[in-house]
Amino acid sequence: IDIRKSSKFIKMCGITLLYEYYKEQNDIRKVSSIQKHRGGDHQGIEEGEKYALGHERLSVCDLSAHGHQPFYSSDKKIKLIHNGEIYNHKHLKSKYKLKCNSGSDSEVILRLYEEFEGKMDDVLELLDGMFSFVIIDEQRDKIIIARDRFGIKPLSYVATEKGFGAASEIKVIASISEGKPIQNFKPGMVAEIDMTEPMKVTEEGEFVNYKQYYNPSWYEGRKIRRYHSEEMVKVSIRTLLIEAVHKRIPDIPFGIMLSGGLDSSLIAGIASFIKRDMKIPTFSVGIGKEMNGNIVPLSQDIINAREVATFLGTDHHERLFTEEEVIASLREVIFAVESYDVTTIRGAIPMMFLAEEARKKVRCVLSGEGADEIFCGYSYFGEAEDAWALHVESIQKVRSLHVTDNQRVDRTTSYKTLECRVPFMDTDFVDYCMTHIDPELKVTHKDGIEKLILRTAFEEDSFISDASLNRSKIQLSDGVGYTYIDALKEHANHMVSTTDLENASKRWKVDTPKTKEAFLYRSIFSELFPGQDHLPFIWKTFEHVVDPSGRLQQQELQAIKRKKNEINL
Figure 1 (cartoon, rainbow, N blue to C red):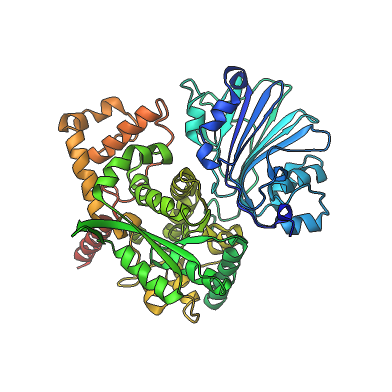
Figure 2: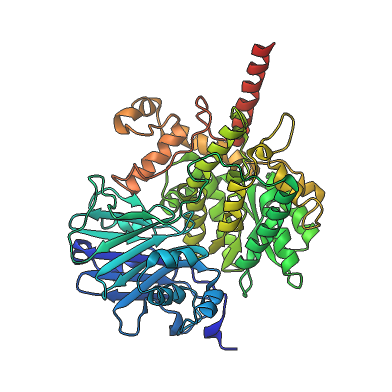
């Protein structure tokens, strides 16, 4: 077997581009190394008169230099750096008879760009995967930058009339931005820089030559009447999700992040069915307490995950952490996840522990993120006035994933040099669910269970047990064990005074912290990323609830329902 021609290898990476001023002022090797945790096996550098490219590579199968980046055209005039995975690269190679020098899926992007003579719209339409990439085209004097449809893979940038810098992580750009505002490169977008003209940016430092290549009919919440029957919906959900899992399974050993809830259990069940001859490693995380020299679990997720792992016969592993570890990890987590949002940080802490545990066994995992946004699984969705309002809110949540769950998952796993793949964020699956499912089928009715249409789509299969199929949603930070949240609050109370909180608005005009916990996270973020407080996305659900805990959100929802019933009476 020629390992260089392996069809499915893992190569989680970090990419960096420095252009004009930012190239002149910085050492590309030093800047690129800031995100070395995303790779570590090889650093690829390419420098031209106006630009510099950096690539940090994590390789698993293709260990030879054939897979090193950048990739080049035969005349060396076109260069590519890419982070992500193109799942249909074998099909594209075959269909367009592409002449590739490696087994890398990344190289397919460059060869397609050559095949279509620089017409990037045609290339992007063909790509099925998660990606962010940069192409330097000295034949046509332009730079092409693009990001996948849902922002699964990260990309941030700083732009002025003097120059431009882009990288996978904010911390890289923060090292060169000189206080200029950093921007999130938007999902489903492509930008083009003309190297013969001065940079064109807005006063806020955003691209002028931005183009949205992914613009599905459901994006703007337009009412369309193309809903399929309930039975057809069930068949389609099942077929598309199985295919989404299948295409994300690598040829090397991989694992699954398993909370024991519906979403991760379905992914684990489908993967176990596909790889019936393999005992797949599964990983769960939860708060524990030391008793008689041992750490005992205080987490419902741990208990639920054990049940699922036993049913599926997986090679199950657990990471129990203590309240002391939570407090000790806080600064590192905020640095890794690049956010001060309370929901994001609460979820990132256990996920970082989980990623660290998984990395001991594998380099790639699958997870169940995305299902709650698509199928309206969060408790606050029950506040929606009607099915259409529910659908509109679902659209906003899906479109915000690049700054919420996708960011949390990517940063925490990448920080531990682990690649995470998310089957629920498959383009075909998302497009179908957001276009052809009547929003009424996503409504959680009184005393009902959320995501019912997803559950019933698999009720005749034996992928998971009936108990797992019918288990209600538990928010990540609650299921892991709420005592670690209490520990964070207690720590914040100790670190932040009442006077500090009362004067928070003087320090931060936008997204002013309303709790001591939020104040503490904001303070740490501001210290680590000065001048970039505009970047993080803040989860907003109920107007009067300042604590984003799923448990408290559920209590608020029940109070709203009681009040409505009293008015009706």
